[in-house]
Amino acid sequence: MSIRWKLATMFIALVFLVMIVAGTIIIFSLRIAEEDARREDLALMIQNINAEVIQRNIAAGTVFDEDARADLEDAIRESFAIISGQTPADTEAFIVSGQNRMTLQSTTGSYDPLNHQAIISALGGQEVFSSWRRYPDRLGNVIYWFEFAMPITIDSGYAPDYVIYVRSSAEAFNDRMRDTTGTIAMASVFALLGASVLSIVFAGSLTQNLLRLNKNIKEFKVGAGTEPIPVNIAKDEVGQLTESFNVMSRELNANMAAITSEKNKMEIIMYNMTDGVLAYDEGGVLVHSNYVCEELLGINNIGDMSMRQLFGRIGIEFDEGTFIDNMEDCIINLGEKYINASFNPFKSEDGRSQGIIIVFQDITKHMLLDKMRKDFVANVSHEIRTPLTTIKSYAETLMDGAAEDAEIRDNFLNIINNEADRMAVIIKDLLELSRFDDKRTDFDFDFADLVALVRDNVNQHKLYGDRHNKEITFTSGLVSAHIHMDPERINQVLNNIITNSFRYSGDSAKIEVEIHESGRYYMVYITDNGIGIPKEDLRMVFERFYRVDKARSRELGGTGLGLSIAKEIMEAHGGRISVSSELGVGTTMMLRFPKDAQMADD
Image 1 (cartoon, rainbow, N blue to C red):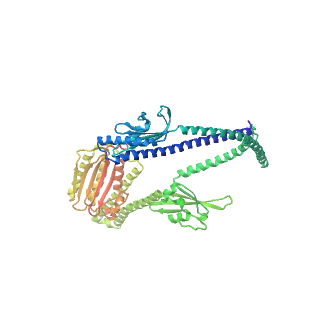
Image 2 (image 1 turned 60 degrees about the vertical axis):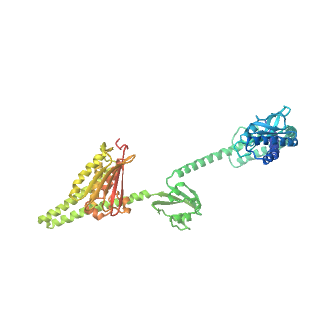
């Protein structure tokens, strides 16, 4: 089948479809218009009946009892009989009592419409309009109707007192619709005949143009220096043209597929990067960004900002005239964040700068780790240098002749021994923390009674307290509390905290140790009345080598590592250590042990 006949057939089919659609729209429009007109007419008729028959008689008297209602219904029948003669010939009206569900009066004589769905719905309080319903007329012939039922309530009850139901015959309209349909069908026939003639003429003209266009496309490809592609000639002219375009389409599709694939790869890479990326053109206009950048910089409207505005916002200075080639990497401090900004200009093939790509990398952890490393090295150096300095100075003094004096010699040797012991304790604690960091610490977990363990530890410290005029008490509302723990390590934690409480509480110290429980945890509270800890130092007390009063801590023999070790032990038990304190009042340490957590060796 040639393209000429294909086009002719398509054109005729299109005209036929248009006529069918247009005719259908016209018919449905007429039906809808008729339904709207009938709805208005029936509603107006109902309003007239309501006003003239029901409301007028209601206004003449008050209806509250059964006798008054019976009189009202008699008056309604009489009034309805008066106006029923005004009803059009193809329209019927009914008044239905909502109290006893019966027809009070109608224009049809004996026909009773109580089983009609519209009346049933209206008795339920719903106003209903329906179209194209098949019911018998007054002569018994089943025909199509438009119907409207409206509930009427007299004394604001839930159920309607009356229902006015009117219906109008649709037969006359159906006749008009049949005539209209016939006219549309006749017009469609004439339209199809005219379309057939025009389509044949048009298709012949178009076919010649398609052949000429197809030839020009092939000549253009050969003239461009490309070899003609051998193809199987299709059965019609459109097939030949399609094959010519397929050559270009395949090439374009291959190129576009490669470009799209690369673009998708780049989008996926950019989306999943943990670094923020911004790309600006040579005019400082944003051409690309990823969502990580907004999170790092804390700016939600980066797309609305120029490069100058962004740099001003985050505190980067640059020379606007030569920024693309001369920008140097820098570190930005945004609150508690440290972000490294790396600038990478991109250029065209001729070497001209086209813009710049900025990569933002969050280096906060690196900065903090570096600071912690420096602080740790400084603290270790300081802690070890102090006893070494003392040992060296006393040793030199002894070497210079002080050893001849037995009292001085013994005193100096005792100091040297104490400082050596202090260095050994520092090194021991450092090695233990190192084992914690490398997860090389061994624990001997077992089920043990926490209450008994704490009580025994307190009793051990009572001897020291009695000798130094310091009081320690133990209170527990629990008889026992068996948990999974390493008793020796928990004793180490308790010893460290209670020793600190004695050490920093001065004379007449009072330490209270209590055990409580909650739904999931056992809590051990150790409270003293010592010097307390300033509020700004509370979050740092578990850091290594951190001391609130450095001079006094060294004087009392503290290394600044005990609470760090206690924290590591508690975390290894799945628990937690925390502190609350008030300067000059005292300090409370809380140890929280999970009741049912499994330990690391399980």
